[in-house]
Image (cartoon, rainbow, N blue to C red; front, side, top):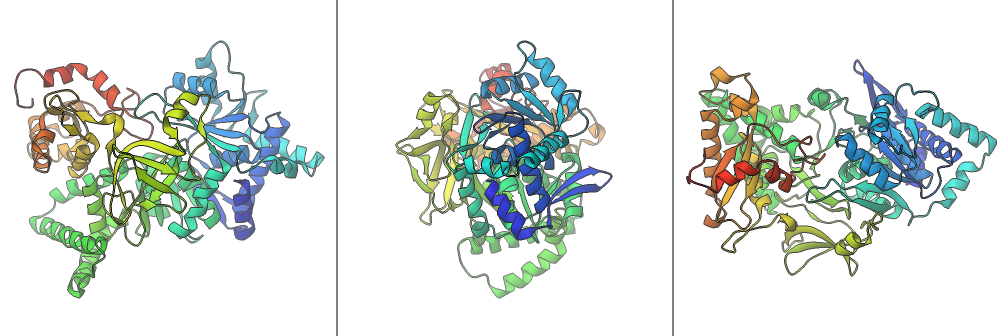
Length: 594
């Protein structure tokens, strides 16, 4: 990967590469040359500490410029970069550090280091600590200390870095990914430099970004979507990356930075959609008619384009008016310059995708996984709503007899760390078994219909894919999260959490506005609105798929309770375990919800 950065530094020189917020609206900017120099110094600094090729070095840090510098420095040294999910409980992070055999840990702050050391107890973690930001205790290196050690080592041996880089080969392991564990216990996947570079090389052809573009980075760096698409992929195209100071500040940062390219998980796009609809409900009848009429027109235009059919002149003219009067105001929330809006890290609902296509901002959905890299992407010129796109160059796809999506290609990982049995389960005869059930249309577009492990088989033998049904709720503003239940049971039920902002805007909720979320969630007008949402979705389902009962929960699913992964995917089994009494009640007594 270092060679990719080296070429970028030669091509883009002193142009800005990374913008790290330092408070009060100010940023520390690294040029491409400074980026490259920092990476070389970190690599040589690690080598001077005795950290060598093949050694695992962990990173426990939020996504920020210093993470990028350290990550590339680790890889340039021939070591293996292992990023931790910072939202995991500390005890789980300690377990991952021990299991990964890390020899050194880059940690964001001295305080974070102290928390990890205390949680580890005895025996102490056998690692060297490097603090990325702020001061460090005595005998602990800061990032600047490490870089200084690297400069000293290079001064003593001017050929040191060239010796280090000559050791690193394309087939060497570059990254150890901690899987987020959505459908089971987390594992550790190993990915080579060659696999990463294959994905990076696909960027210029498929995204066509330039140094005049820019993006905002806010996803966890332990996740493959962030690591590949927002950290590594911008390098060969010279795309500057701005780091978000916090999720709370992201909406304002969108307006000031005005990105042209943005990758966000479905939860972000769902929240934007829900807030728009909540606001529209407060508008005058004329404004509501204008909005819904414009969306209907946009949906018709998007459908024609998706089908490859010409758009009549009158529709094009009407669309220009709708764009100026309605859609431009929505796009302004995201800075007004967004050319490529991408959704990744979790499935996107088809109806949600259609809404964004209707407002002239189609979401480009792709598909990747820890074990396979990024393998599909919707073509920018013709995305299809609900699809994860077509196979990227060099990637082969096929469906197993049961519909499971299989992948073969140079981006596929090398296996799970010290876990040959699990590796053999997913890598068979050169194919990666993804665990996702899919369909492929005549034009090669792939549609994920569900997870194999999440398949519901009712007591009468009917097969139900919960992800498809749950996806239909993504355009119901009142519903925040939903989990279907029904495996080996006589009918389908659901656990629902609500969007508090949408709930408070309902008629009859005036007295509860600003009240406790747990009281808002179970208020009669809210439960009634959820009932209407369930009824609307049920109209789109076969009788055996329809939700017969539901229960509105008083809180959202959370990472802290183990119900969500760090990338906001629902851990279905943990949800059912945490709410098993409610689940039991759903299958007893009355047939109506609540």
